[in-house]
Image (cartoon, rainbow, N blue to C red; front, side):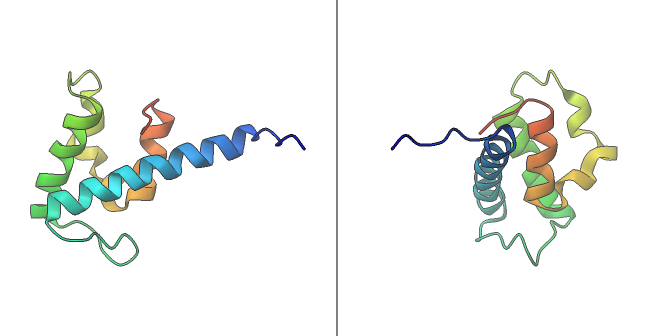
Length: 93
């Protein structure tokens, strides 16, 4: 029996989940420990390592510099929120 094709929303959710998994790995690497996305928010010191790491991987040419400016730092409070924002801007894992 043929497999049903994914709906557009299912495909979007799968892409966001893959992006979130990649971001979880980046957060863990930047903080030096396993990142607990459910119970942690990055502090100032952690964010100072996370933001440049994410920027280097996803926007090495700094073409979208507005994403990494201070007024957008609220996006970095959890990887799910950041994954959705980056997905909406066209980034993929």
